[in-house]
Length: 623
Image (cartoon, rainbow, N blue to C red):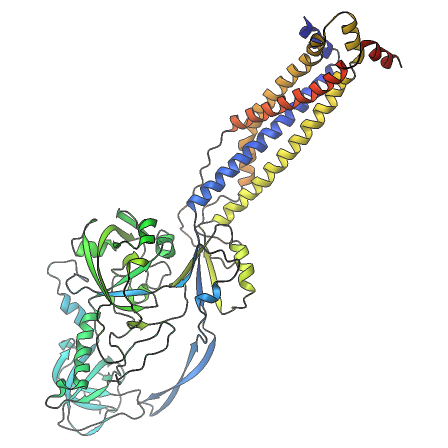
């Protein structure tokens, strides 16, 4: 009866009641959308942190230009070639600045060469002549030659007396040899035997147009390629090899032994494969961009990278040629180190390749193995695109191992050194910190360095999340403020201004409890209806609001870094963000919160009315 009277009282002011209902509905819907967007935003951030990685590459640009004087035997004069130098090599330590917040610091990556004498590296057909392939693709031969006349090797006609190494089909017995780029070429005496390494050249001059000789062979100048990690050449007892007279017992001398080492080196070189140590597969662009992926087995785990387990990934071609499967073991005798990129030496197109430097140290000796471990194959990978020179290509037959698994000292086995480049220097920073990183990096003044970031589109996705975070905050603040104001206004109208009604009911013998029910029941029932409708409306509006804040941000790109040093590539695989929200839960939470707040505010007004005596209420009303 009391509740019915309370509702009848509200029906006497239909406009006020309708306005109150719709305002409560709107406030609750606004709160519900804000809560849902907040929850979706929190879930999105969690998914982003789990599914995205931000890495950067460092490239030192060539800056200084100079001209090198080169002797040309045909022109009998010097020619000048322009060349660019890096100048001072920037060290990775200079990038370890305050505020960089690296997850993995920049490191100039090294790769190793493993001498795989017993492995099949080039052929997949049973009847394929590997030796012939290696010889026919090598346009360089090592010979013992006898000059027909005494003269300067610029050029001079010789008879090949003995082929030490190379393809016998490359010559017909008589050759013209020329020390083409040497301003002081050696004098070769008729009838004496000389050892030399020569390579085919289209140049032809001073040969009297002999019809049987299509061109000349130029003399190679063989030097050692032993360096420090900083690119300084190591000096030793080894002197340049170009032409030496072969006398009895020559190959027992130190000089002769060096020539024998050169012959062995060529065989060793074509039987090495690149081994890439790394601390995370994401630091290799081939895996980061999904150009390379494990097709059999699994990737190397974080725990295996951290502990330096003797596990590895091998290419599908290498595994197929050697009958290897996941779980098999291979031994990797590491003989040299190079601070370049395997894909620049061992071409990913499958043409094989050679080490980036000679395998002769500063003492003229062959490099021996500095580390030799047996690795278990945990995964076999493939490449989608094998493009020579591509940033995300892997080298031919490249094996990938944990960085910490290599414990040997390679400081005396470095055959190539290079400054930081995109192919050998990468780092990882927290997601969303590209802009902050670049702002601090620019203060270093290292203008010769170019930084590129790869984040799988995280930056653009983050913009959508930030938009949604702001929207959810505005809705939460606006809904809360609107709820308080609406409840305060209508609490005053429905309760505080009902003093006469309260006084009359109490004078007629109604208890305080009954008066409380009379005052609150109608308003709370109307509030309950409003918050339920508002909660449902908020749940329905959440999807539209979320879609609006995401528009233009969640699109398919491979990597992005806003306005900073960015690249985009066509054909990138789509990155799909899936977010599962519970809009009904948000609507229920908003409805419950508004109803509790309504009960608290109206209860406060009600207690104020009931504290006063009926006669005092009537006196104030009469006044």
